[in-house]
Image (cartoon, helix red, strand yellow):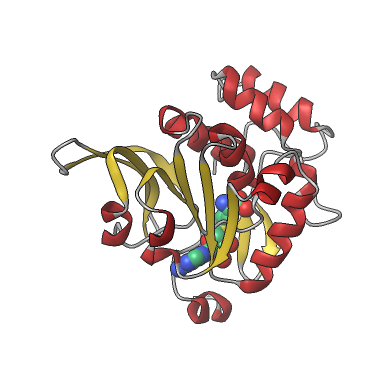
Length: 230
Ligand SMILES: C[S@@+](CC[C@H](N)C(=O)[O-])C[C@H]1O[C@@H](n2cnc3c(N)ncnc32)[C@H](O)[C@@H]1O
């Protein structure tokens, strides 16, 4: 797996963002601003090296993704995260990226997280309440729900942007259906070998798909299979 720096070399959120810029991962001012505002330290389990460039276990056979993956996904989706737009974060886990999305789309927009482990939904809400996105949670433009993200989240569809934080064997049709024309879905696809796919919905409803990079994510699966560890 790619790692731009290791544990221990960085102990502040600002330093993490500076490193992401230094290694050329972050090129967008807006993404840098948002990742500086949302302190990753709030979202990782106590005692974890919060600002190292690696995924970390968050329990329930789930992880928080590495900072460079968060930055990459924010940048891939940036045009579809303009103020007022709607974004769905499937497999929202710790809530970190949902909080970043909410700051991107602002109070006129809507950021929705869907996660199938109820305990993670509860802890993600507690994390967000301590973060820069807390006012958006309070006002209601940011919300996190328990559900099977393979079904999307129809209540707030259609979405300008959909991010999936777990690898699907194939792209779930409900996610394409819930994308607006002009909308973009970023999703890891595959089993052992996975590609981060970018799916753009055209104005006629057809989709264009390209692979961005090879990745390694936990599976997008049923709750039971995840808790069994397969
Ligand atoms: C790699 S973690 C990413 C979490 C989040 N992006 C973060 O960085 O904190 C993937 C998440 O997807 C969740 N997940 C897996 N399958 C799911 C499904 N069918 N519906 C909803 N969430 C799912 C897992 O529980 C886990 O929290």
